[in-house]
Length: 380
Image (cartoon, rainbow, N blue to C red; front, side, top):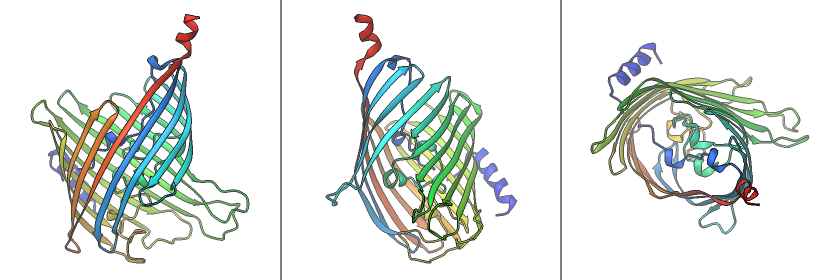
C-alpha cells in the first residue's frame, strides 16, 4: 500500500478516531511468581470452557462450531521467590466426541526478577502474546491451546515485551513429516501516560517455518513472515464510560520461502479500531480492515486473501475490505472465575455479505497452597 496510507493511520490514531482489537485479558495465561509463594507446593487448576459458533457462508471461511472444555492440572513448587517449577497434564474434550481430542504433558521452569521473566517449557502463550487478530487468530486459544519452547518477557511501567519460540512439531531421523515452529515478538512502548490517558507504540512480528533436513520428504521449505506497527490511545475515567480506546495498525506479509507455494508473495493491510467500555464491563467496538494480497499462517481467517481450511479450496480474493462490530461482556464473577461473552457481526464490503459469530468463554484459574516447606521447617 502507498505511504500516504501509513500517514493516514497515524493521523487517525492521534485524532482519537478509529474503528477495536478485542480485549482478551481475561483469557490470558500467566504463571504467578512472587515473594508470598516462596517455599509453597501448589496445586494449579485451570478450567476453560468454550462455545464459539461461526455462522459463515463465504468462500474464505464457511461456518463451523467449536464447543467443549479444557482442563490443566499441575503441581508447582516455588523454591525461591524468583523461581517456579511446575508440571502436570492438559486435557481437551470436544462435546459430541466421546474421546479426548488432546492429552498433553505440561512442564515449565519460570525465572522472574525485577520485571524480567524467562520460561522454558510450556509457555505463557496464545492470547498472552497480545498480537492483533490479522497476525494471530484468537481461535487458537481453543484449537492450539498449548505452546512449548522458550520465552523472554519484560514487564515495566513504560515497556511490555514478549519474545518466544514455539516448537510445534518435532522431527526425528527418517520422519515422514516436516518440523514446524513459530518465532514471535510483541512489544508495547509507552510514549505518554498518566492516570487518565496513555499513548502506546506496539511493534509485532511473527515468523512460521516448516522444513527440516532429516525427514524422508522432498517437500520444499516454507517460511512466512508477518509484522505490524501501530498506535494505541486510551482514555480512562471513573464515570459510566470507564475506557475509550483506539488501536490502529499497519500490517505486512512476506513469503520468505526459497520455493514459493502461496498464491501471493507479499501483501499488507490496515486495521483501524475503536472501543468503549462501560462501568458494567460491557464493551462495544468497531473495526475496519483493508487488506491487499495479505496472508498470515497464524492469522484470523477472515483477514486472509486466500481461503482458509474452512473455505472453498483454491479460492483467492486479492483485496479484502471488512467492517467489524462487536459487543462483549467481560467480567470476573468470583475470585478465579471469569466470563467472556461475545457477539461479533461483520460486513464484507467486497462481497456485500453480512455474517456473524458468537462466543461464550467461562474460565476458572486458581492456585491452591497444599503445603509450605519453609514454614513447616520453621515449626520443627
